[in-house]
Image 1 (cartoon, rainbow, N blue to C red):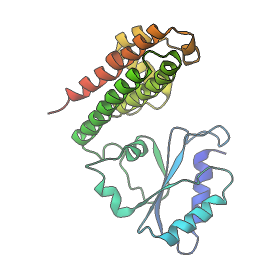
Image 2 (tube, rainbow, N blue to C red):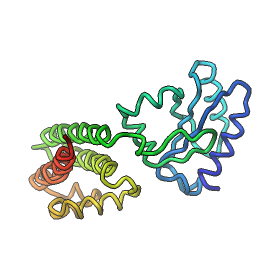
Image 3 (cartoon, one colour):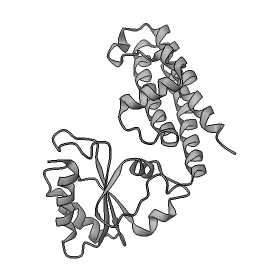
Image 4 (tube, rainbow, N blue to C red):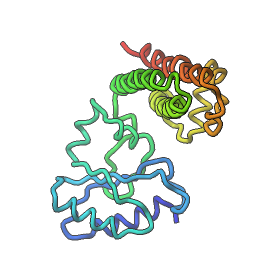
Length: 236
């Protein structure tokens, strides 16, 4: 059974529980339309009129009984909180808006179009700037020690991919799969592909320390920095 179909059945049942005042249920993530046994990237947002301890306990108890899907850690929002986030959008809420489906109740979102382009651009710039700074910390922390540099390079690759996903929110929000994100990134920034495009995570430990440091520096200089400059140039 598909994730989205199974989740719809589950929440139709949960919404019928006495005192469960649910306005809307939204499923989000990349695996919404996969079969349940194949999917792992999906989460649930539950919107209620008012959050209190009683309804939180009821939701936890009801979700804990479900075996077909892992929905034990939902995000719960009050209806009034959604409008207040449109000018200062948390990253988690952005992730929801990129790939979601309302499976119960009212349709409350209009995707990324609900956020002004300038608010989205400013948020993207903040995230990329944080990535740039964190990347520099990871690089200098790993320098001079092969084992440590291997660990830091793996973290740098994670930072890079998160940065690419964030960059594409404003450039190509329709992309979902990791290979699509990476292919689009390398097409736009060919120097990055030349410097580290063929890097294999499984073989990082086979690379000597000096080369690892060069790759780490390239991820920052030819990867994260050009995306930040691109978004910065979109600003006022």
